[in-house]
Length: 123
Image (cartoon, helix red, strand yellow):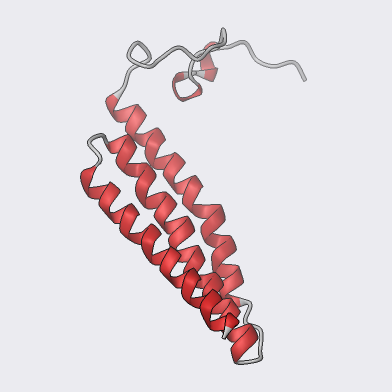
């Protein structure tokens, strides 16, 4: 009984994250804001469903399945990296160094830093 409740809670929470991520993708005004919603929904929503699946197979069926664990690790590693690459592409296509906020350091934004203008590093 407790196991079924845990699995159900995991599925409901993952469904809520999926709905919130879909709603954010539709309603948020800026592409950079819209990028945040589906990456969180993917990481937490699908991750929650996979964890619920691991609990089901481990505790109800009696055998462990590492496929769900590997998929969860893959999502936790790739979703933020993919979001970062999409955001960086958006910055390169729609922004200039003058329109970006200050970095807070003496160095420019790494996206617009051109290493060919710097002296070669000493070996």
